[in-house]
Image (cartoon, rainbow, N blue to C red; front, side, top):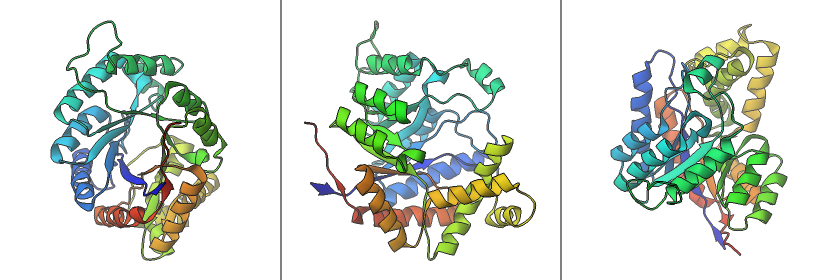
Length: 329
């Protein structure tokens, strides 16, 4: 039967031009409190190591802080990157958090490695080839199937897989819900195969969404993130989020290469941005194409007041959407 999708926010603890690293972490906690007050379902945290533009290297640690700063909000990770961690240590951390905040955890896991070779060496993660083995091991620990008893003994929190095409097959085989984004929002055939192989599976769409008074304002608020991502892809520079004025100046001058400008336009075209009716229509189309039950919104406007207003608008808009509730069998 039709129901409204759940809305969660992915916060990357982005540093902003003119601000310090600690400011980014405090902003994450403030955003989580606002999200809970607005009625948002969940608040997820990312993992990035030794990156100037992102200061969330330990998502389970930050998850503990967010959970302690809120009371009802579902808190999650998007995700814990298993090649960087021992599964038993991750399971212990999650068990402690599940004991302290029962029923509030949503654990997303992935297979991404560190951003650079020195970071990968520092983490001891040179390859992601054993990511599925680590995932199975994590699930075994959480569900009491390991060779020693995990403590504290608590019900296992739900584990989501941040999935590509191959990851969807793994998730279906292991009976896990999935978070999908990027090209899977355009080519939904792998998502359909996942549904066929795992009829009771759940799908969350990861995408950037900005609701504004008009399209020009939405584009302006997305531009800093678009410029930052373009620089990452071409230069390997993942710096603080520029102001909208700095981003516009970079696009309007010779501050970006032709390829970078193309990447900026591609990002802006793939994001969901515009007025409330425009965003509502686009999100509804995506839900109908994918059958997703949840939305995981990742946009980070430079201005924290704009970010707060965007989160609040989404909290009002998403309950107006519909998706089809799926049950196993």
